[in-house]
Length: 318
Image (cartoon, rainbow, N blue to C red; front, side, top):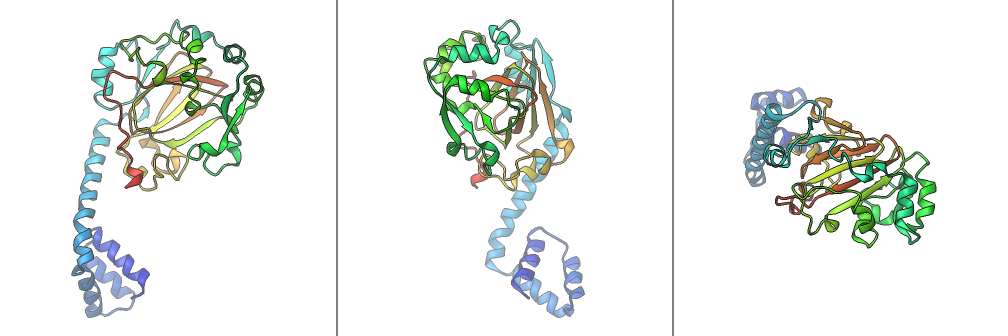
């Protein structure tokens, strides 16, 4: 047998395909029954196969358990939406069960809902800010963001943001909220202490700002987050971390396929369309991608009243 044929045969045996079906496939390729059985026996008695088979079985059993959990717990279609959800019920019913939820009108009454690009630029002053520029030419602009960081004046950014597209984006990694300017912005986002810790609020929040059409590629985070949409509309598409097909080509927090629809079936995808004032709870590890439907400004918070450091979760490194 050629090496590729041996690999094909080993794959079938590792996956537990019926031996009689494998024998028939080999004889259909021109082998005698005796030759087919010899090839099967050679692989089954290999010490490499003996070491690999239990691990493959474990993976198959875990995949079956994940599929069962998905079928029982999955909310097909849109992410569930709740109005006036209390923090107590959020923590008990959603975070503790590791499920996403839209918090409708979460930011009602926040001054930030009156923000405009011009107002925010004025608040930022004249000191340069870090923006990702040249995303359209990058192979994977989200994963390789460090190569795209440009320091520009806020006034220049104001001109760029009105051009629809995905070429320029101000994302969480700008650390703008951890600078003195963050204090000028956070007063307009008075999130209650029952939702997040206030003592390190500025250390645990991030500003997102981009033109219509900005797109964050498929990835997962290693912490929970509450994303609050402040200006414009934004669409998130999510899939459970138990979606087995999504675990095949991770790289390591991102996916080699940038679009969730190239990875899993439509019925495995949940959609969240956020209007200004809405918030989305993104549980740690959930696959998601985001598209700005308008010029968009949002704020994410991860200083939750729950354990929230899952930096050891990275299946793409396994």
